[in-house]
Length: 252
Image 1 (tube, rainbow, N blue to C red):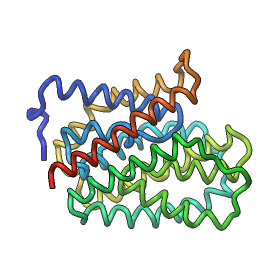
Image 2: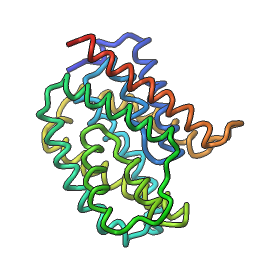
Image 3: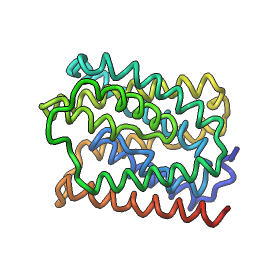
């Protein structure tokens, strides 16, 4: 377990800037913090600490959105997605707590790489998904959320294939992510992960950066379109995934 005193001012500054940038993305699309923040944070913290830390920050970031817009969500979809998400999250949590750290690093690198390739492909469902697809998307979204901190893109694929109104999709996605993070925090708390002043100190240190990033993300105005901006981010994620895999290869 790392202490705050173990980090230099430069290292803490890099981590704080990373949190701001990752939550700018969260403020824009409602997920993706782990995919942006984890490759950088892995230089300072193990994955087994990063995922619970970001889950805690995600919960605080999402809960205000749920309180504000939760009533507008599509509950006909959520009543099926949430139970499946809980099951998948529990399975991902068990694996995260038991898997060898080096294998978890490799799996995260591969996951990040595949996510970036999917995002850059621009794939979107061309027709309405059948209701039966709730099972694989709900379970795998929960599993990847607990294991790697980001199953939100799977929920986005499913909801885009089920709901026609963009605003309805956004609100339903935000509500689902809010429920997911609360459940993950409960699991990590039960396992005693948060019973450490060090991890909680890092969380408290990162909260202002999280709030700043989420605020900017919601109000950001760029010369680039949202699609162009996200392509740049996904290209960075692609390089991050490659670097993680290379890092694993050099350590085995």
